[in-house]
Image 1 (cartoon, rainbow, N blue to C red):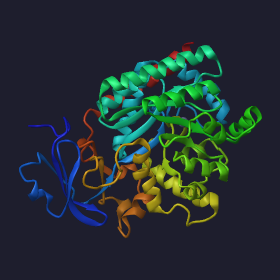
Image 2 (cartoon, rainbow, N blue to C red):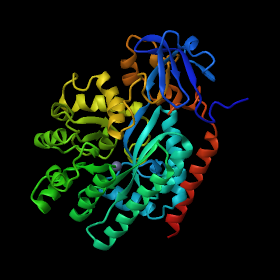
Image 3 (cartoon, rainbow, N blue to C red):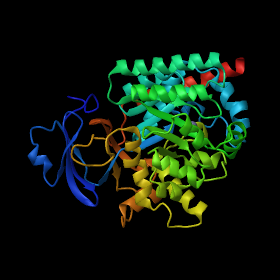
Length: 436
Ligand SMILES: [Zn+2]
């Protein structure tokens, strides 16, 4: 018997709810949504190789995680409840110093499994050993934009190494010729990368038409240090160095002033809001959603790495984003549920350049099915409200990316072996770090 998980097939999902109406969705064998309507199952009879019964499910576009460090799943629960600088210098960095390519592979396989399970079909990653990340993404079947975390620490010698690593990753990904995987440049942040490093990244992105992935104004200290060092605020600095482009994703953006929001909007920058990580590490300020919205910035969502979250569940992120914005602005009308869901779908897909993030004919078949036979969807007054405020990633029963079924009725093939491999890698990593 043919295995539905094996590759892309022409599929039809029958009787699934889209915008409150039961329809059939036909996916052709190129991985594109080729029909949505009343009777696609008869129209494409003979074409569809598999039928997925969508009765009792709501179809949504796959969620998009626009800022993470996937392999940090290995550090999940390793150190919590600490001050950011101590957490990094005493716990995270000493462990990361012992990372090997294989660890990153296993950490990313685990991350991809977790994302598929909770309905994410694309992510934006920045880390090290990114060739191993690419291998894991390729095997898992989801989409990713991958950047090497460029950190020169204002040292010319180190800069040369980072330039090489960035170039190597870009050519490695080009050679993969896999449309699900794209390269970006990843200047880590203004406090870890020199002017020369940032300018090189901007130039490389321009020349090779790649995205730029950077952390921006996560903490107040970052902004104050920037003013002391350069006499200007971070956004002005990035503008001067050519980092602000329509293909730039700036993560965090907690400590922006209004003028900076307007700059990001004018340059068409995508802003990745990471509310769980910001709350856990106590950044003491929420990304200014209303100001960025006024400025016309593309606002999307990310989980950040698993060490500061501690999961990759984008449903949770959507909920926390909506709650944090209301709480912070002392206004329950800020960031209503439909807008929060758009941040995780259409806006995220736009940021990564992976289609429209919508369920429309011609769009890539990145589709998830959320079960209505769950307590979180009972009763079903408003589906969007339930999905944002009462459900989490556990509501997802089927995940399809690029037309390929990656999870069906909560089954992901080989999941136990992947969990075991990642668990072994995490254990060995801690032993190596302790032995040094
Ligand atoms: Zn980050």
